[in-house]
Image (cartoon, rainbow, N blue to C red):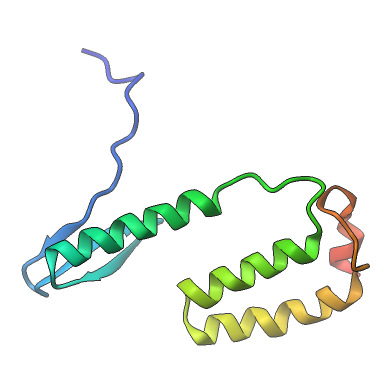
Length: 114
């Protein structure tokens, strides 16, 4: 029987006996969900909900600054303080170099490279 039309298996939490912790593998990373099975599955569902929301399509009429703010909020919630601070410094000059009302559809390579 061919599996060409079957959907790829969704990653689910798994228990690592050596560490006595639950993990899920997403984007090539093992994410620690904690030692408690029930809490681990709750955290897993929260992560999947955030991922589903994050993969939503950006509207062409959405302001670029709103996209940057959403990205920074994501970093604040999901990444380390060091990563957040890096992107905050990195994107600061870009934020100030573009017009406040610039939309995604108006964004050009020159806005980024300048």
